[in-house]
Length: 313
Image (cartoon, rainbow, N blue to C red; front, side):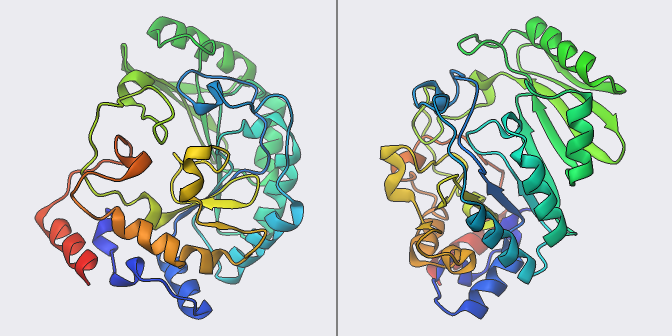
């Protein structure tokens, strides 16, 4: 089911009433993405880290802020996904184990997930992640930082990761030049190992990467309705393609949780509601969304009618 089937007028109207904001969040948000530190060990060509320094130092999210987020989510018995991906490499610092344990204790029904480049992952670390509460893992196969997709090299690189993990696996996708994917079998954890051709299925990351910049986005986007993104510095942004450490993206920061710590009121704020309303149009999207190729979906007549009526409400 598409989120557009569950779209309601309250998604595009702000509120400063906490109970209403909590309920809207509870009914709407199914993924909260938290960046617990800044460091990434790579400068991949398809990522803004190619020209933004995430290597020189590692800046941690304040532990009090992380605990506040988990506590607030616990107060509504949040049962969606918590993912530890943003623009860092989540497994580069084993503080993730402590953060997973805290989330598992406070959110027993949430699905704890991350994406990783796999550089730090081996059999022992995988078991530690599992014991800490992680139950979903995407291992993305990357080549050298500025190396473009090569199907055979992707397969060989994936085999290196598999030799470190030493767990059963089965190939699920083998589309030369486009995508290669394996399903890994480990206890009750869902694990995907895959490589993708970002020139074909990537996006410009908020106009920061030279991928599909000639694309004109007119389709509505549901990402800011059901996802919440918090950078390592505590700033909330409306989409995974935005980041608060890019000057051009600063106007899209929804809130700084260090200053206004309530995640529910942040989701229901005027800035958030205005952004969601803008994403419901069939016109060319504004600013850094103008060439976004992310989150596209085919809409049926009923969904189109619901989008139009919600935006006009």
